[in-house]
Image 1 (cartoon, one colour):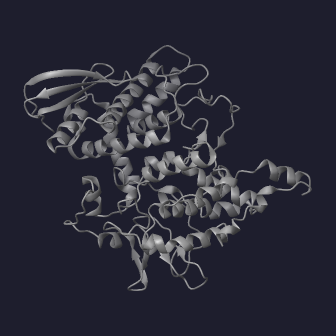
Image 2 (cartoon, helix red, strand yellow):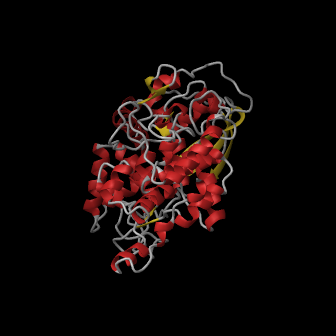
Image 3 (cartoon, helix red, strand yellow):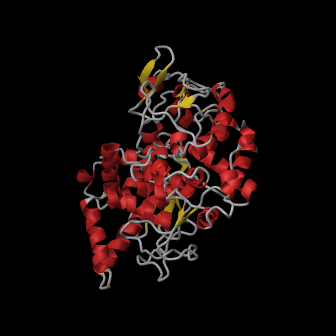
Length: 495
């Protein structure tokens, strides 16, 4: 049990988070931390969050936890989880028509507390407001996926602390958040569950989620979508070439090509190692290996054999590595490079289950390409990618300072560039959706073939990506009298 050692209070400043009534932070001068104000976070019901206080005390003792927007992301997350929990509990106790639904949800959380965390982040992503208001009385509008990711990043650090230091059974506390957090951490560890991976495939869908507590009616801001239907936001096909040709950073270009023409998720592309680039001798172009970032193998050029990815990463471990201007977070990771799907913080990339069919006899699974000219383009920039100065790591894609490319960096650059190219902001998953569009409308593939290409376990997942353009539908109905313009999209300028 963590024992706090904060001494006499000297001065307290109460600060409410603007736009939120979920918590109040009392920033207080203490004898222990001198001129650094320490935050006591009071939840919506007036109670003090023990787990947050313990976590913050631990961080302050290390000289961390500055008063930044990131810290307030954590305050809001913990406080809103409590709001969500209390709202469902109260609705289950009220005499209302839907109380059985809320009772069922509350019972589910009592039996499996980890689902409180999962359900909360889904509720934040999709919002709780429908045409009849908010059934919970909390009125959350849909949150941008980028903001959700920031919350998850901060929550992951708090989650690890709770798991390592807070024993809920001996706390004699009503801190339901830390109880759910600990159970969630156990669930993640046992099942290799990725919260980001769980949300990422739905982040570009306008409409409602499938969780039982969400109302099926569209939220405000999405009323233009007919009930029972969803639409997806794929990157405009006629703008994909401009996106790639007008981007100067080869790391961004390489990521765009892999996502748009090999159908990789951004979280998969960012974890490609330099040793995943192989020449099989079966064609003029290099191939890209793909496998689980921890449990699969990559290629060793020295031994000419497969080698576990963890072994490759471990070979870069250097506790004395130092490079000027790198942050503590960067140095911590670079001194001990490791698979990014199970790390907290900015280097987290997530990993979603994939179906790898038809592996190569020697190299394992190799990526397929939907367009040979895109593959040529990737080959042309590969030399520049491989020659980059890396800050003690084997990852193919790098950030500006030589560190492994971080997803927030990649995402922000794509969002800015997409606005410049198309006038609208597109998320990273829009390129994978373009891939499904291209397979259907340009190549005329059957959905079963596309499902194998995109590494889905079932056709239902592929249906979300297999978009059919109106031009193709009209062309098929008129027996090809009307031209399908997408068949001419071949990117031959990249040859």
